[in-house]
Every structure is written in C-alpha cells, then in structure tokens.
Image (cartoon, rainbow, N blue to C red; front, top):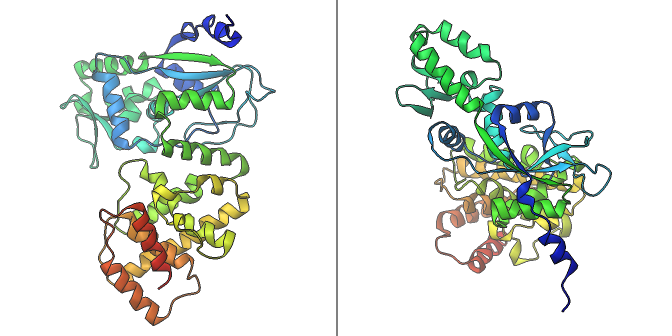
Length: 388
C-alpha cells in the first residue's frame, strides 16, 4: 500500500511543541523596538473602544487566560517567506526584515490594545480604571477622584503612576497606592501563550489566520486583499474608507453596525466609479452599490492611480448625495442603501442634473422601499434609478 510522503512528514512534525509564554510588557517592548510586526496582508485595527475595555477587564478580572497569539518567525529573509512587514497602529512599511523577525499572524487587536495602554495612546484617553466600580470603564467626562487613566496605570514608565498619585491626594494613601501597584504588576506580568511557526509562505499564513480568526469570513478576506495594496502606496483605510465613514457620521448617520460594515459599505460604494472609469456607463446589474456585490478582485487589479481615481470620484459623489438630502430637507434614513444609491446616481451624473431630474430624484427617494427586498430586486431598483 502506498502512503503519501507528505502525510508521513506531517505525522513527524508536532507544531504544538513550539510554544512559550511571554509577558504583556515584553511583547509591547518588542513592538516598540520593531521586533514584532504585522504582515502586509493583515487588515487594519477593527476593535471598538468598548472591545478594548472588555479585553483589559478580562485580563484584570477573569480567572481564565486569554487565547494564544500566533507568530510566524522569519528566518529565511531572501525568499517567498519574507512577506513585507508593517508596524503596529500606523502600518508603516518596514524598510528591511531582519533574521528572526516575529510577524503576528493572529492577535493584532489584542496586542494593539495593550500597546496603546503601554504607550498612553490618545485612542484610549477616555479609558480609566474606576476603583469604586472595580473595573475599566469609558469616561466621556472629566475624571473623578477614584479614576486613573489606563495610559497612566499601565504606562511603560513606572514613575508615571507614582507621579499621578502624588498629584491627586485622594489616591495618595498607602492603601490605594499599594492596590494600584498590585493591579499594574498583574497586567505587567500577565502572560500570553505564543504559538510559533517558522518561515510560513503567505498562503500558509493566510490559511492559519483564517482558521484561527475568521473561519474564512468574506469581509476579512476583502480587508486582507486591500491591505496588501499598501506596498503600492495605497492605504484603503486612510485614503478612502475612513474618509467615507467620517463624512457619513458627520451628517448624522451611523449605519456601521456590525463592525464589518466599516469596510463592506465603503467598498460597495466604489462599484459605480469602477463601472464609470472602466466602461463609461452602467452595464451590469450586479454592480449595484451594495455589500453583496463588492468587486474587490477587480478593484485590486486596477493600477494604483486608477484606484485612487475611483476613491476621488466616489467621495465627490458622496458629498453630493449627502448635500442633496440636506438641501431638499429629505428624511434621513439610517440605512446605507439611500446614501450609496444616491452616490451611484451622482457618479453617473457628474456634470449636474436638471430641475426635472431633481424632482424625479426627490420623488424616488421619498417612495423607494428597500425593506425585505431580494438582491435581484435591489439591483433592479438601482438600474431604474440611473435611468431617471
């Protein structure tokens, strides 16, 4: 009987033996020194502030440990295994990869949260430890006497906490200082289990990431594909998706729930611009600006300058759509379809619309109904809208 050689090789390799535990502060030091980085394909930071608080509280209060971090060690720096690396938070491309570079395949959100506390990052400026409640909370008001900013409590500099208690008399008693030092020391020496692999190819890393983190979720795969464009000077988040989201939020909408819609709605809104720039007109029903019709493959295959043009055309049309609703005192529906469909209309009517078209568009807006509509029906709505 023939036995596959790869099967025998796999049977002789036990990757679970290559694990160790590491302190949170040690991992943060590795991030600070650039020894711990992210592969270029990794998506951006996706956790909400509340998720960060939940992690901090879990580390402080729960009896069970956090799940393991997965790291690929890059020893072979001159081959396909040396996937380009970016820094945490700012996602700056690392100019070189050193032998032994540690690349985080799974665990970015957890490590980033702890590093933000360690470095007193402004993203956590409203997170405090409330001694009365016995947990970390989000405080949008001025801090009370029994609250300590997480960026002070868990700061990399030990003296920051002592100086803070000295300036705040309510915290200066020996009992309070001792309690705060105990809490700080617990988080400082909290250990994560690290599972290591060595010289995984990009495909092997993505497969590991998907099994651990996504179960192959479509949105996460989209994020990874766009993240890889950073190597070509394209940052989908800072150059487009975050701008789209902020414009919508500034006009009083917030339909970005759940978190994955922070990506899927802006990406879907690129469909009209893609059609316009590639074909010059609307040709296909499955290019409606809705999440089920996202065209990440086609977009990622565009030349960088053409993709940037898609961003610009879409954001310009978004401004027109939001202004159209405001200027005509239309009801604000907290649903992406109304914004994205109007956006698509203005992409294909870039030079402006007549008064008759304006009245037809207002009438369409006031009477269209997206509730319980199939994808086919929603595509038909979009095609009919463009024909107004």
